[in-house]
Image (tube, rainbow, N blue to C red; front, side, top):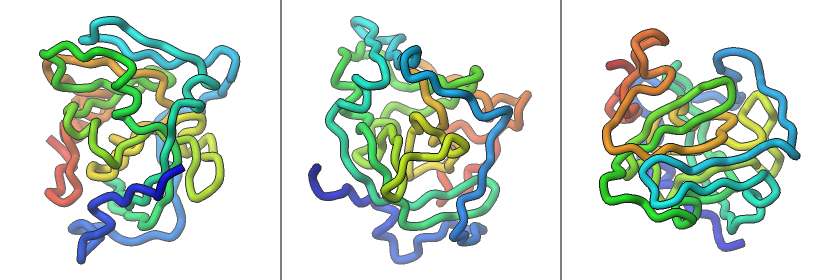
Length: 199
């Protein structure tokens, strides 16, 4: 494995966004119960605006080329956890498995229990974005997203969705779970440096 990628936020002189507080612990926050994981039945799907949908099982997924990432994490509930080391498959590596159609501009991340979150394709394809199953040298705890969690360091942590099962490529942006007015009306993008907490 090559040297870890260092997220740009780690290189900032001031690493804590406005109105955030540092924590050494890792608070557990999610909606609904922690899902169970059946390795033999787990599948990952890439669909939507692609020339041909693609899917794989868990063992195939974790055997894709993977990398390490050093990044900070900022939660919309106002805590920040610095110097996280993640290991997983880069989002660019995954997208290389399909041919995107030209009109694809956004991604909807689909997770267990019907949870979703939306991202601009440019954010999703950042060099420091990956699908992780390890954190600080250990497999993720189920409460923190095992067997697969998206990591998008530049955005608030709700965009780093837990228990991911697939991605949908879209032409137009649409609200995911937390972004919907029904579940809180969180910001459609969620940049912590701009305090994009709510719409």
